[in-house]
Length: 124
Image (cartoon, rainbow, N blue to C red; front, top):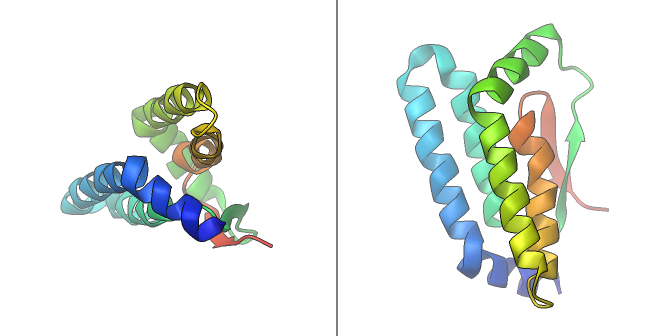
């Protein structure tokens, strides 16, 4: 079932979301000071391609630098990304077929808000 959901996700919205995160990651890596945000954006792009069967968990070794970075991320990019995922998720949930895809969009909200200090792991 995960494979089927991931394939439908990839075709309908995952590819476009991943491309958006990849472009943001390339821009962040071009600006040398924002390389950590670029790396986080690449991780989110990977997760946006294939979200079913994986989940997000906080890293226990994340420190104050990731908290400060997350605050900067929320102000400049995270807020808008989270709103985009929320709106897309609600619209997808309006159809019965789109409900699992809407839920996957809701799963992307926490990592789009605070990408530093979290990691993507296989779901239990």
